[in-house]
Image (cartoon, rainbow, N blue to C red):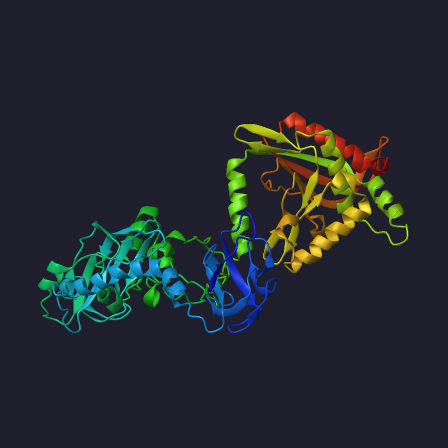
Length: 530
């Protein structure tokens, strides 16, 4: 009998999965224990094992496709078995959703019958969206009046947006037949602003029946893509105009110049044909009389604004969910310390002199934290609405950077492990993390977290608590600098650390005492071996 295989829930936080690759194809024989596919979860890419045997009759998701947990993934059954009933049962919900669309197809013709036909050559100009936040605009002034001839590139009006007053340029030609808004009037984006067409065309019906943002009428906005664009800026050296030379300026520019007491003949216009506009007056800087100064040529951008879009991976979505929940649910506060690392550096050098032994500073930090946590169980705790859980075991999560973000595998019972054992475990986790081969069990159960960016040269930073932990330690780089020892200035090596605490479980004094204990282990690491 055919069996439906659904998208499995491979981690406690998984809500959807991506088929990374299929290891079987339709028609293949499946034995219990065979690997069907590799599934990308929010934490790792994992092999998905078959618990039934038979023939792979159907594949519901292609490689790279995403689907929620419990969605149809595949069907296994006897060779040649009819599985159409299973597909029909799985597709019942989408069929119900398609029904309303048929009603819409019947209703659409009636709505179109009331539309007014736009005569050939008539262009409807609507209130443009001149900024990303603009919802309405105000007509500052009209530079054309009804009956005027409009050429492509002419400035129709000055529109005041929520950010600035901008010149509104026409990209069509004809006669201005109608003005829908007087100077000073405000209207929503896509409202009727003006109509351009052939002289003598009757546009009364268009004006009478015009509807803003009509869902069934997309032709009007598409016919005219009127937009305000910055005028071309020439890389020239501005020069003062002679007093008898005609000055061309917008009404708003003239008004601003008059208010500021600036002579328009001293301003170099950057609008069409050297026309002075608002920004020219606002940006004008008078030069000292009698001094010869060379102005810097105006900047002309050669590039353009663009961007690349990257689809969010399952790991990136999980990071966003968990860290957002932590930041906005746990009241974070931060404690900053700086440790003397001279003894730790000497200790590591001596320890690594043992044959076939190599430990890192991060291994020393993990071990020191584990021992300190045993002495301060309040920092090794978890918060619940009705209680606090003080953990007697110490499981330290170690943040590891991978291509899609980061994962936090857990070194369990870290206080009982030796430094080489901790180092071996962390190296193994790091290698498998980059290949997406960590199991969910290896990333669960931490009671405290260490995040180290020292290898990237970061001296100090703060981290977001990895819930349900009560604290996370941010470890910076070891820096060589002058320090005071025995009353004298000497060259020393220090490291900055920041402890982020959840104030619901860890008070300031509690966190401070933990850091004091940690300082003792870090500055005298031989005590960790006792």
